[in-house]
Image (tube, rainbow, N blue to C red; front, side):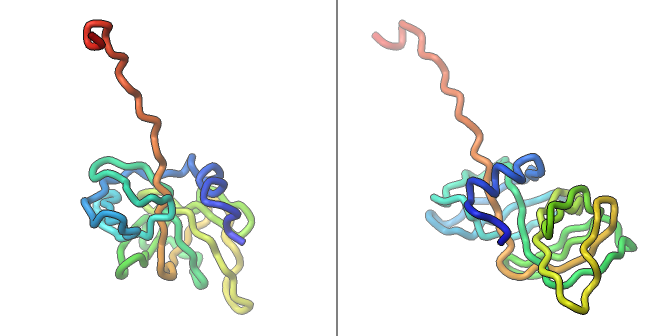
Length: 156
């Protein structure tokens, strides 16, 4: 199990949230299009009510891979393979059981589902290249909104 709840997943991986720019979308659509670095990707938003505003956004990018290679010849990269599918290459910065955080130019939290004949799970410091299954997900970090204190003159 990769997560017990959306809130728990966000709390666990929040320190690895990426900064990006969200684009406008249909109201209520869970498909979020976001620029991460120089790459535009589509991600399935897990943190409803699916109303992340267009503009700057922080989000935990998450995918699941069933195959990977321990190879860093490409250097760090993030590419869209299609709607909500990613190709990731980068250095593992943290591992917790079968979940790794990959620095692909932006942090990506990847759940690894190892096959019996596949490579071993990577450790922090290893390079990894993988393609995620659809749908790759976005957990939008909602920042508290600071409200301006109204002056007494405005309350009259």
